[in-house]
Image (cartoon, rainbow, N blue to C red):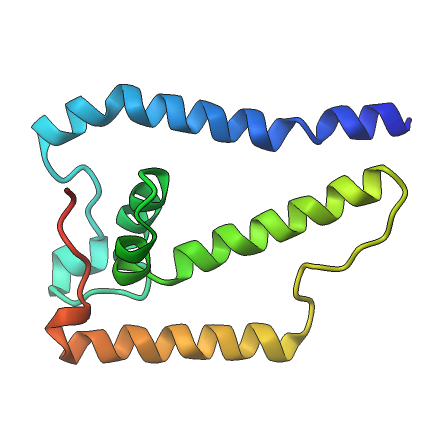
Length: 135
């Protein structure tokens, strides 16, 4: 049974590689088509929602631009970091070691969500905080 768990640990890195390959294959088409991702709230009201810029942020992360990713939507790099920590925990657990890296405190999650919501509201009034156009 432990060998089966260890084999399942290969799924996330393989999926990440597939996403990177898929993204690079579609990147030229995306640049010619224009903005493929439209926020429904922004399309109707013109207001950026707390998730606006998340796709751009993930694309900037895929290209290695951490600063641009944080500017577009700081939640995306944090989610990636938390996912990596969770994955490392699972790798250690598959080999019988107990390591706790993934934040489990409700205080942490409450403060993180609160900070993100304050940032989302602040950027409605500060245009410099709005997501950057794709480069």
